[in-house]
Image (cartoon, rainbow, N blue to C red; front, side):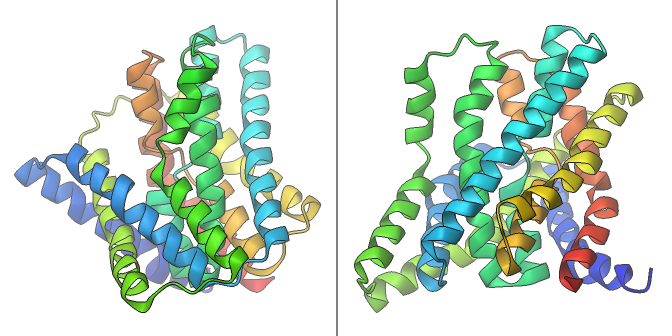
Amino acid sequence: MYLLLPILRDQILPIFLAAGIGAAFERIFHPDIKSLSRVSFYILSPCLVFSSITNNNLPAIEFWRIAAFALATVLLSGILAWTVGSILKLRPSMTSALMITCMFVNGGYYGISLILFAFGTSAMSRAIVYYLVSIVSMYSLGVFIASNGLTEPKEAFTRVAKVPALYALLFAGLLRWQEWHTPAWLYRSVNLLGEAAIPVMLLILGMQLAKVKLILRWQWISLVILLRMLIMPVIAFGLASLFQLTGDARRAAITEASMPTAVIVTVLALEYDLEPTLITEAVVVTTLISPLTLTPIIAILQMI
């Protein structure tokens, strides 16, 4: 317990305080969250990706191992949720809802911030790889599941192609591969904007959660907590060993795989009318209880 309290106080509490300020701001001023989210998505996040990749020595083999780990956790969590839904004979829409709440985590707004505080910038650059794989999976496989298989491959590809952070990753990778140096004036500008990404992400997280109206269905919530917050972290430890992840890559990957359900999953639920109330409940509750599950995970990762 003595070891857990400093982690909760120094690494998780600051995130919830920043998100709480965003929630309070939303309640008082009712800002345009969509515009702020676009600034984060199209400007700040790509700058964070570019500056993190160019500023850290991330070997290609480690990049691909993290990417494979991320894809494996997404697929395994989906298979697990589908299996449980089939065994419990849930209605098809509820099984699909369970799948996307378990598959897609809040690896950006919450995960990257937490990993920066807990493990530093080197681990954060590795967390970004997981986050990008998760985003691509969500805009392709996630859309396919949410639409009950009605989405055309062309539409999924178009959605993925609109993720600007991917282009930042490709450009940064090209510079690293060719051993080209970014001009100081360009790097400083990009780095300055990238440093704004995490605080803005946390404010947006709080604003989004503040707009949620919660009606708890405990059987549903218990099932999501069991799969997303308890079973998947255990599986993540095994997968990290399977993919030979060590050091900061291991810490970042396991932490990302243990995060609560992504807030953006509610957008898919509303867009395709896929149990939006149930999915919103899952997002809020898994986020609120996450300090209880993430604190011991971080403590273990800091010791090994």
